[in-house]
Amino acid sequence: FHQNAEISVFEVNIRFVGGLLSAYYLSGEEVFRKKAVELGEKLLPAFNTPTGIPWALLNIKSGIGRNWPWASGGSSILAEFGTLHLEFVHLSHLSGNPVFAEKVMNIRKVLNRLDKPEGLYPNYLNPSSGQWGQHHVSIGGLGDSFYEYLLKAWLMSDKTDEEGKKMYYDAVQAIETHLIRKSSGGLTYIAEWKGGLLEHKMGHLTCFAGGMFALGADGAPSDKTGHHIELGAEIARTCHESYDRTSMKLGPEAFRFDGGVEAIATRQNEKYYILRPEVIETYMYMWRLTHDPKYRQWAWEAVEALEKHCRVDGGYSGIRDVYNNHESHDDVQQSFFLSETLKYLYLLFSDDDILPFEHWVFNTEAHPLPILHKEDGSKEEKQK
Ligand code: DMJ
Image (cartoon, rainbow, N blue to C red; front, side):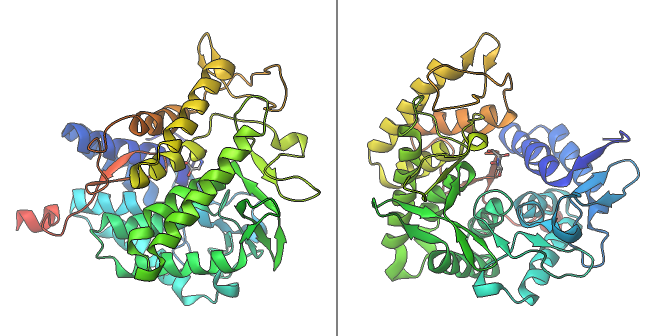
């Protein structure tokens, strides 16, 4: 925690703060609570910007922050600054120090003050001017977990966080109108939006949204509950097709719906699979929420493909081209393979009372965090 090193605020939060919080809640060992809070404190200087929208990168020794040099006009990234909420609310809850929750509530305040093009959230926001960067919108890379955290913040608050709820359902409404399309072959997909023009491409990352829509179905306006479940089921089916249409039965990094193809990667640099969890994550939510056996069947197809093509002597490896008959391994086992892909598979084939949805939400790295039930109160309140 005291290295002279530059870290990603988002990655440290979702993997390390989230991991420590889960370890604490699952074990009750004080050391994990202490370390989670200590690490959270190390991240606070990232919020020292004119708007309070945090920097993407932070030197944890000096406390100096900056943004990714490639991000539109010095912007912070929506999926990064928008994916701190769950962990920071828990840090305040466990430490009795409101500063963490205040930082993330301020992010919402800034977002709610801004005009949104067609009700959509661009992926880039400048932390100095408080203005959007390029009007690129994605439910995959650069946008994804912002939407996930709006819904889960509401669920984690025992459905008391009305602001998070409203932001989530308003965003889904805009996504449906402007980004969700059906291919001529009948596959529903979520396109990307670039200044009003659609790119008919869906990333593997975007496949998490099937599970998100289904998880959010319950809170949707009453006439829309079935519709949100159906939307989740359709995204799950499309993402299953993206796996099924490869030689290895593992999905590519991105697939397209143009130039006569459907759910297939056409560019060489989009044909890789790096053990990502999103499709299996969506199967897990769909299974728990519908108990349709096809989701276990589809997940098992993925297990068999992982065993056949990704298993290597030292563990599991990513694949360079899922359309090739011969594996070319990238020799990397991403940490999310353990924390997410395998955990979601385990939950899919377990009973629903293991980490039940009434009591737990999963952070975006699949670290379970307990729902803060109304009667729980904060540590501070308990001490009083
Ligand atoms: C994970 O780190 C998280 O799920 C994140 O939100 C997006 N991508 C990876 C896994 O693909």
